[in-house]
Length: 111
Image 1 (cartoon, rainbow, N blue to C red):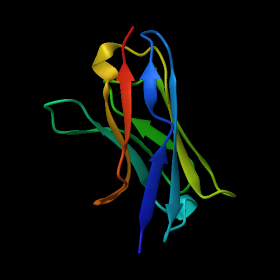
Image 2 (image 1 turned 60 degrees about the vertical axis):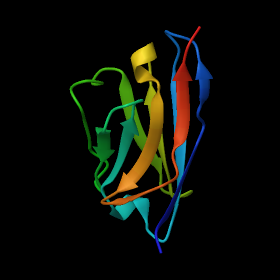
Image 3 (image 1 turned 180 degrees about the vertical axis):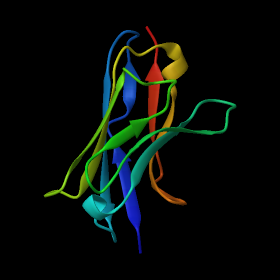
Image 4 (image 1 turned 180 degrees about the horizontal axis):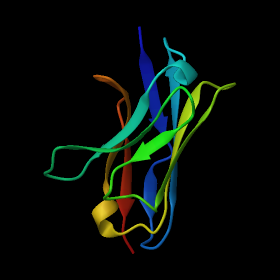
């Protein structure tokens, strides 16, 4: 059974950065195409980017230049760094593989 557990959310000031982690079990992240998505209040699920088994990444145009997705093969974890935060980045953030996703971690950007 695939389990994904996100962590690292919280309150961040505008202009700051977030770094989220996703602990995976039931799959090997280095052998999977893993993604980060988010859901802003009142909006649908938005794809942010992904990392392929070969380590290459692709990002949504909406966050390109501000986002870094990486993984730690030894720990079987995925990470998301998002810089230059605005209130528009307030959302529940999810680590996903296909249709599987964790419970999410809430990020609120506010002064």
